[in-house]
Amino acid sequence: MGALLAAPGAAATSPITEYGPVPSSLPVGGVCEVEFDHRGKLWVEQYLSSQVARFDPATGEFTNFDTPMPLSMPGGMDLDEAGNLWMPQVTGNSLLRVDTRDGGMTEIPLPWARAFATEPLGIPLHSGLGLANDIAWGPDHALWFTLGGLNSIGRYDPATGEFARYRVPGEILGQVHALFGIIKPGPGRTVVFGLPQMNEIGTIDVDTKTFTRYTMPTPASFPVGVRTASDGSIWVGESLAMKIARIDPATGRIREYPLAGPGGILTGLLKGLGQGTVGNPLPSPGPVAQGSDGNIYVAVSFPAATGLGYQIARLDPDTGDVAMWPTPSPASYPCDINPHEPGAIWFGLLTPNRIGRLDIDGA
Image (tube, rainbow, N blue to C red; front, top):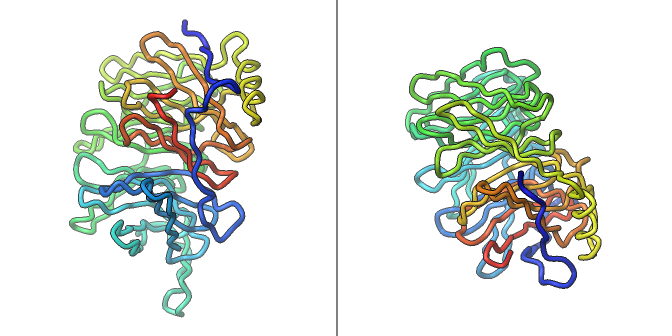
């Protein structure tokens, strides 16, 4: 069993640097997912203000872009091979393609569950009940996305313009999936997604459209964060169980790593106070990712604003040891993990409307 290791406190320089606040039309824009484009710029989702920002790490400058539809709630993002940024518009019942060269946007309506559209009247409002929330570029060169309102996973082929959807066998309360579900590239020729309301993780084979589901060992663990590691294993953040889990797709074996070891909650709280920050000390993991050092990094905040966590955790998969670092901003609600810059982890911070960077080498 791993241990909670000491992390830098008031006597040491924090390995976390914050940037911002991100420009927004609202006091809290809803900074969450962050994604690097092919030119090294970081794109920042703001789902509350329905904006997408571009951040230049070299200059520290932000550029903001409004989505075509107000109150569209842009969701999780991914890039296609050409470098276009894609995201669903949750309330807009559509996909959104962003040209990362100039921020130009194109809406592609979903063909299902459309409620109303006022574009013919010159009003850019449209809605529906598909509730697509997150998107992933699949190994079949198509976009796969959650469809919680339809208890399904959707697929869009940008080369042909064709849509398809596949009902998740036995899924119930997909609206919960729409709020908290994450979809990412999976092992082999699959995409992987969370079914938190069912205490399961699922994959779908992009060729055969076969679903595989894994039930988490801890009941009602609420698995939300999901990511595939370089060895093909699936890593999961179990929010309510306060654990990280590793799934071996070859055997179906699941191993859990607790984040709340003896004294762990108190230790995390004291470290935050020593740095001058505070928040919910419960280690409720959200999104996870494998860093360039092979360790697993975790946004430690229940995936809802009421969680108000304020830490980033590192799990050593070989030893099970855990280290945590508080963010400079209190009750910051870290909302995403992006590992694509070697030597660093980037993440969105919802409540202060900032983005953060954890220096792996300095941690």
